[in-house]
Image (cartoon, rainbow, N blue to C red; front, side, top):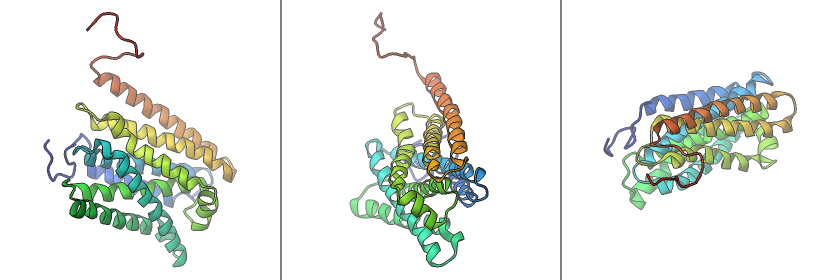
Length: 270
């Protein structure tokens, strides 16, 4: 498919981008809002919400970077995740100021989307980047970044309350860890899979593996809050990572012309 105005851009795939958007937004918001439903189940649901957001964000990276921005993936990734941090903290702070805790995740998403749109408009209108889906994808990546950071923060604290997140995530410096983890989880899949035979499903399998790996590390971070919730998050994340990474490796071997498990030259020239 040639580069055009399609929602999937130059990288149309088997899975519709709108379906992944719904998965990311709805899945992450459900995870965040249910993070306080139970001391054990709540953090797990929040972690799975973060996984949904990362898969969505990885697909958005794939679509915009397929226009030739392979080397720009880290740039748009780190830029959007910084927007995500700002959006998440602004959203829960605004909810506390207004004394309406329920609007925290949604207001944070709105803030991230607005900032992402402004950045994208500057890139297209002032810098002059001729990418038809630049605005849409930057908004999506910023939204996915915000939701993933807040979801994993909620997994640590068992709530999306500002005071708990500031005390257990921001004050301990874990917000910086989530910034790096979510950035790598969202931007790595396309960087790892890009090339002439890049395939959306294989790339998303890689995204699922990086997302569950992030959830696994989140489980370890959650141990600071005590209880058994952190261990369940860790185990679920580890099992998810094993399944997703195995599926990614199998897909890579299946699509490869040949497979060698060492960096040695073949004995006979082929």
